[in-house]
Length: 357
Image (cartoon, rainbow, N blue to C red; front, side):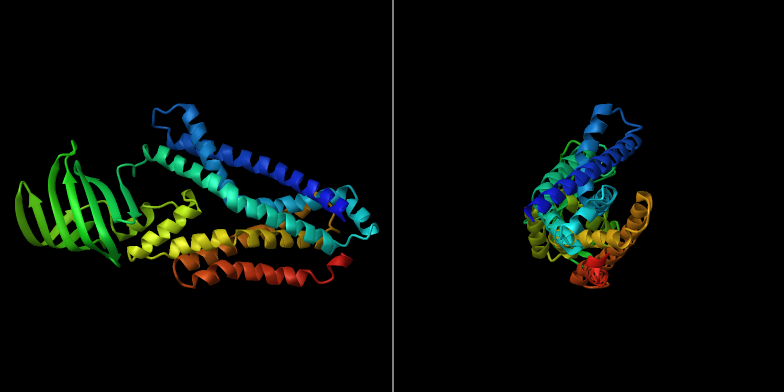
């Protein structure tokens, strides 16, 4: 049995290597084209765009890895079919179910490595990518982050730099806020303090504002402040979850909780990452069973196309469920595990008579 495990492992990892090389090359080329388009009006050297493309490729490979693994398993079976090794396995007493168990163990091992090592590596590169590129983006002058000290917003309007710190977000309101306006040379123009700011629109309504300017103190029941932020933009601008490792994600979740901010996005992303090895296992089972059920079809191209067809369906179902979860139309747990449960049921149904295939 050990000989079979070694032999199957070699074919599997060779197939994975080939698919990774091809997919990484395609993603890298697409990234280069995207960066060239982005910097077409900027005086940027080609080496910089290549460097950005390299930084952004690993996290995209991580996100595509279930699809990569599905293709890997298809390639594995195509090789053993073409070389008649599947027949040798049968004559030697190795059942199809045993092959599936070995592939499943390999997929779990690969998934654990991907989530513990490769994700941390790729998320750190993504973070560097965002920092380098933010200098050239239109949002470079804007920033919104959540820390243990509350929400911090940097904005620029009419040649004024506005720094806002709020202790919490309550629906469409910032609470216990302090705003400082600077000129372009970072000289303080005025400070504004308020317990409640309506941020439902980009023109904030600051209630019972206390204004400090040139050593003077003014009270204003309602002060309108023009900004580039509303509550929706704050939700989307301050974080890119794929650029955060596990420790940073849990810190962000803790900061959200302290700030009375919704942790739905972070919870979903964490749950998605934690379920990653299970997802890879089910994808491996699915791809294996598909290939065993269609082995009578002649031609490798048709086998791959059938596998791709089912993978696209799985991809869209998974994305649909994820969107339903982020919009809180269904529970977070259901949005992550419903596609996995569906895959499990399909795999269970296809397992019937697998050794007779």
